Length: 243
Length: 371
Image (cartoon, rainbow over all chains, first blue to last red; front, side, top):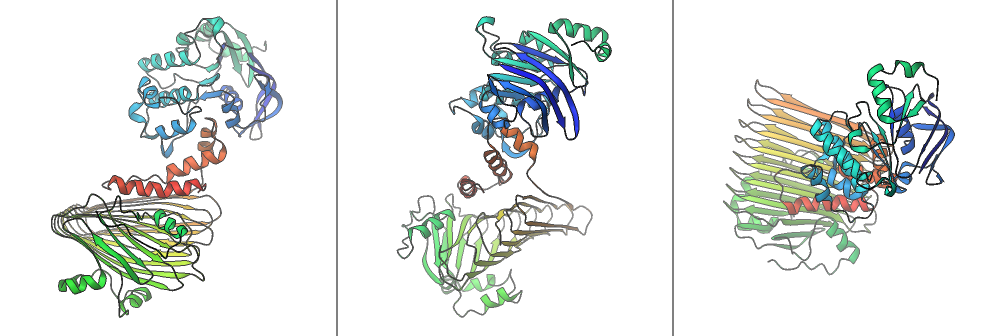
């Protein structure tokens, strides 16, 4: 589904990502781990097509199509979606109106979907204005439910969220990624940034990657990598040059 | 139900312009109507019991006491505009009286139409007597083909008596060669509420106005809301003022201003003269193309116990907001229009739904053409 080859990315004049290579197959969910500032969010924003993130070298191929220089709305139309860690507040724009605007089929039952993530009372509220951490994440998840992307990127879906909401968000994202289906029948793929690993209880992740200093340093079983990091921190990862 | 308004001499285009100004010629959702075309009053009636819609001249023939409301809130010597209107031997305009305890659910519409090259002058007096509730939508427009241009001089005096309420929603739909000079003032008595809403999404050469509400009564309220877009060549010198005199009086002055190349001067002044009064002034401006938004918020407190605040912000569309919507699949133009629509979305407390919808419809119309 997604193929990243020799990707170098600048933010402004500074090169932040160096020689990223990643392959995510249909139905797979990958986890991206790494210390703060290592470039995880930069990678996701680049994959989403944000204009501040300039690809200086390398390619991003999605479903066989080179999307490296494609605008974010074109990527979204092709089925790429993202849960943002800190989405902007948009004064005056009601969540309900935005959901109507982004609906691809215009057939979704927005009130019902909103109710399923306890956001039905927020449809007439300005997007993210005065929302708590959990409400922001539920709003993001709701938008993804309306978008129904084939490739879902999640930037710390559990940060700022209490345990009860993690369960709701995790279960809903699990459904988005077809975790309720047998592995062989899953078509949707995901790339998840997590620090705590709580979200992994709901996502049945297939592969893990560790990013340090703008490079992917190692790959492996996500739970084993997480266990190592919890025990030893990122110190060894920072020193490790093995990829 | 009042009768359909006939305007045989108006082209379909101009009738559509009336509709865009909030005027319903079929009178389906209106309880009364006043229509002045240039200097001719062609329609004045109201079917709502206890409420009268009269031409200025008929009103003064009917009620001698109206002289006590004439030029009392606005001085005839205020400026050239007021002097011009005061000098007219045959004054035009309307008088709307909501007698004691009356109220209208369906609004009254007042339409001032400028069709020829000239100065249209009106003098309006609006009175809500004790306990009355009066809702008015005023649609002001010009013909699509007003040759060399024209001007509209409008004097409006509002009297909100004890426990009464007036909402006045003015939608301007002029054209590039029209100058508009409203001069209006209101006085609000005990527990009275005055809502003044102004919407202008279409080109105009110049608008200059600075309506003032004097809140004399205890717990009286005034809310001014302005939603405007200045196109290239437009000069919009707008403002509103609230003078808080009654104990517990409060005022809110809200402006959403967008320039696409024109100039907007957004003035505001709240004067807290009595303890226990409150006022808030808010101006938010968005510069889409090179133009000017000059916000001049003033708050003036002269006693202990008045609480006044203001916030003013002028900026551009936030790139991160546009990209956020684009990441959800909207193209750049759609994302921009969606954010602007939200920016202009001001919900006015106490305004009947029909009038709020009319304001929303004006903005929707502007959105169709991509603002």
